Amino acid sequence: MAIKRIGVLTGGGDCPGLNAVIRSVAKAAIYRYGVRVFGIEDGFQGLIEDRVGELMSLHVSGILTRGGTILGTNNRADPARYYVGDDADGEPIFENVVDRCVATVDKHQLDALIVIGGDGTMACAAPFIDAGINCIGVPKTIDNDIVGTDISFGFTTAYTTATLSLDRLHSTAASHHRVMVCELMGRNAGWLTLHAGLASGSDVILLPEIPFDLDAVSKFVESRTQRGRGFSIIACAEGAAVKGEDQVVAFHVGQSHHTARLGGIGEHVAQAIAERTGLETRTTVLGHVQRGGPPVPADRVLATQFGYHALGILMDGAKSRMVTSCGDRIGDTGLMTAVGSQRLVPRDHPLIDIARSVRTSFGE
Ligand code: F6P
Image 1 (spheres, rainbow, N blue to C red):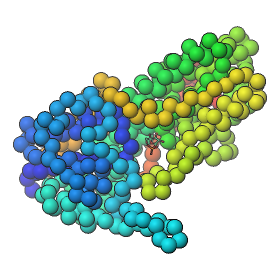
Image 2 (image 1 turned 90 degrees about the vertical axis):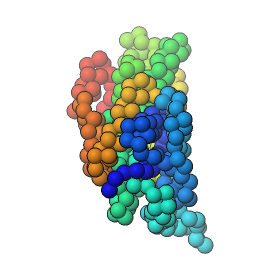
Image 3 (image 1 turned 180 degrees about the horizontal axis):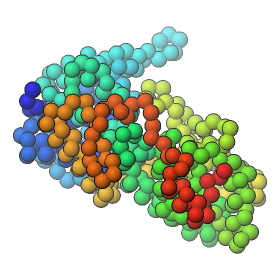
Image 4 (image 1 turned 120 degrees about the vertical axis):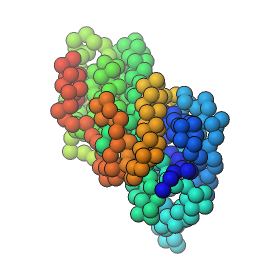
């Protein structure tokens, strides 16, 4: 079937570089292939509610450098399990509204969808494939935890932002001789904290993949003080947990693919250190600052490559594939590769050993 009209959507949490992908897809479609592109608003929500509009060249002009997504996004609207309200007992009611989405696709005569998102978005695409709608996935996340690709755009920007924030904590920590705990995002994966921790020369790095001991962290910080280093910087992943304890959950988002929102471990660590050592501690939670702002040049390049590749393989007849970057090569794998598991930091990752060699503690 000749591809004449494609839909594009962004799903899940936003990240820097989404606009660069949209621009890359739209410009190449219009100018290279003569294909019309339709933007779907707010992820799958736009398909459910038929909020679809044609993207012309002028709509994607000047967006390469902009953070966020011009299409809007949504990390709750799963068409196969769509929240429609609560029952009399206050329990949520979910309906399968995939048919409504298929009707929208038919109405706009879309020959395929390009879905830009994380594992949740790829999972949402599965029923569309079953319904005969071709989907090509483009992986995005600041967490860098998507299985099948070594890196996704947004990650480099996020760890750059986090690194620069940790750098700023250094000077104030040194001036006040304090212990500064900085909590970073990343969900269950420690990539963001490992990279930002290493790049900022953090003294302690706490990762979800390496459960830590509060006494060990406190002793390490104390020993730094005794050696004359009047301060310590601790980069703590939101998913890090004390040995034998659960992750600290801030709250739940019932309709989301990943329901738990992690948060609070940074403050827990800071209080424990203060109690054990008597040192003055402070906590900074970087939060969504890490997701915002313009993509760094490397992410603009990667996102542009991803968009170009997604469109290229679609035009060449590929079905149900997800774009990847492995080594130096942009390629693709089965769309469902990313679904159901996360790419975590292996405990023997070279960066961990390198960090240890410069006397960074992982709190074991
Ligand atoms: O997956 C990206 C991410 O920013 C995680 O690092 C974080 O745990 C989560 O999303 C936050 O989600 P929300 O934007 O719903 O608060």
